[in-house]
Amino acid sequence: MPLDPKTVDHLAELFAQGATNRAVSQTAGVDRNTAARYRAQLGFGPAPKRPAPNRSTLTVEQKVLTLMRPAEGGHMEWTGRRTKSNGTPVFTHHERTYTARSVAFRAHTGRAPVGYVTAECDQPEWCVAPAHLEDEPGRTRARAALAVITGRATSLVECSRGHATAEHRRYLPDGTPYCGACHAEGKRARRAAA
Image (tube, rainbow, N blue to C red; front, side, top):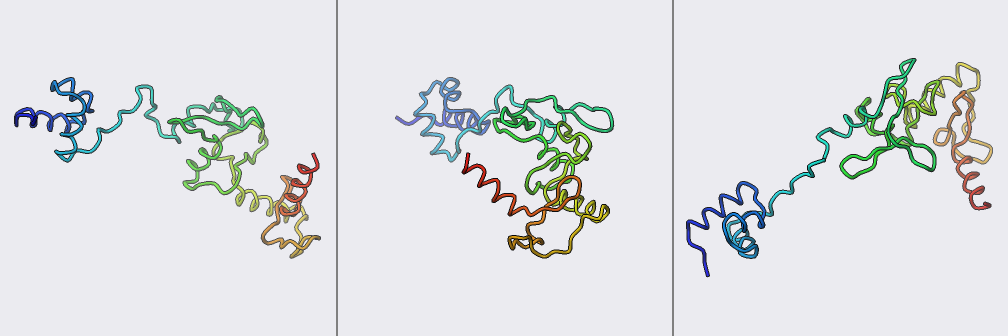
């Protein structure tokens, strides 16, 4: 049986305010199925989902900063949780887990990191200061410059196994060059043997 026009107008007003079918059925005195049918007939989409009452209003970049505390020498110490496997600083924001260093890097540089983000300072184990973080290309540039300064730079175009150094050259923190492809192959072989 169709509803009277005054009730339909009242339903339309409730739908426009974002009321759910349940709220409309309680307020207007109709069952939920009727509310759903009139929602579709009147051209209203589903009611918007309300955020959970305990949901943070902070952005992911703002939240990562709340979990850091200043330390001596311009460093930042992580006060949030860490992974059990390797101690990586992590946090959850809106039901999604993030690594603290990658979010802090993105907030500081304005771009997404390439590869792993590590602290390139004298406290790499625990520092999460955005200005001390580097991704793979940044580490490679800084360590290549160090290799030149310390005399460890090499002009070889291939490693001993034939990998192109332009693509695979990586550097240890002290500037010593090595082949990233050979390193990865060795790591895979050690895992297969274990």
